[in-house]
Amino acid sequence: MSNMDRELRKQLLLIKGEALRTQLTLEIGQWRKPSHLLQQGMSMLGGGSLLSSAMLLLRQGKPRRWLRWLLAGFGLLRLLRR
Image (tube, rainbow, N blue to C red; front, side, top):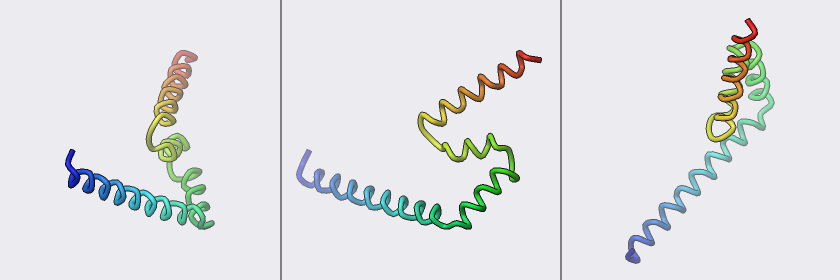
């Protein structure tokens, strides 16, 4: 890897870090607004099922996979009870 490649990689990582910090700052700003929290809470209660709202909260990663498996198991238990 040449010095130019290292410099480009370093700049890319710096830009990526800055973009992630900006995104986090925007998300924290949204969650700090009380009206936003109220709107999210009301949409969870009235605008669709609680299940779909939970899936929106857990957008990615292991928690979402675990939730899917738990929901599939819960659905299977409900079918077996009938």
